[in-house]
Length: 312
Image (cartoon, rainbow, N blue to C red; front, top):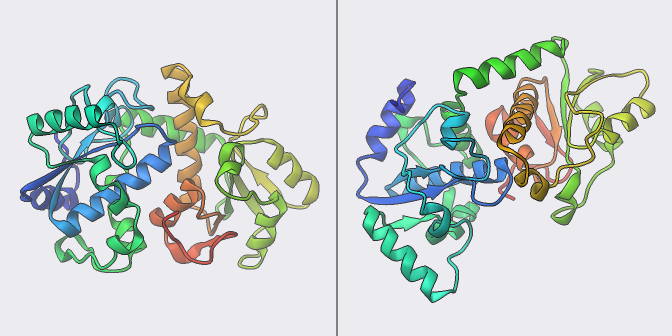
């Protein structure tokens, strides 16, 4: 299948494929979708800055149904499809186990790659190393978040069946023309960062907008109940099931493929709606908040934890 579906991708692949050194980046190793996705964007930007060819590995990942990335999205680059990536191409720093590193090196050399994900992981995670990327032919040359915005909006392209499912669910919500998009993260996020009260998001919104229509993207329906009680004069919309009690990645990973697919479609519904809101209120310490800051105009994003977008 062709991985060129817009003019930007044609230029990207011409440039990317001209680089001599090669990284095979594995997405879907062991974290939530947007943690994995955001790091892929950072890896692509790092590779462009350092003239390293970016190649994707996504088959048999933690959100894969059959093909990996292409279960949900149109392809955008070359992809390495060996099953051995699941064992030797790892998220995070390289392990200290000598035997594993030796086997990984043999596999990497057999593929002709210079790097797997673990070899450049700390570089992807370091914001300073992603600054000052200037590639005029790809419209890259502004701030880090603006450069990420260009990449995100050129590769976020659903497969036709996924696009149909997402649009159908969004249409069923009958959203007003103008609304504020709010992301309230609960669940296992408490292990990484403090959680905020649902009302905090509304109060933050009222500092920047008089709109009283709100779309609430959340993993715990309790947050919606609280907002409806505390702000009875406001209108709230959500696609969160009334049974949802907070996202736990370990629980998601144990589900069947079809259940995972349905959950990811619901996630895509949330982020599409948040991306089209009048303003976005959330947290940059959430991977969804970090992603929304890259996808939409970051100047219309207002977060509770940090005043400016950053890599968390």
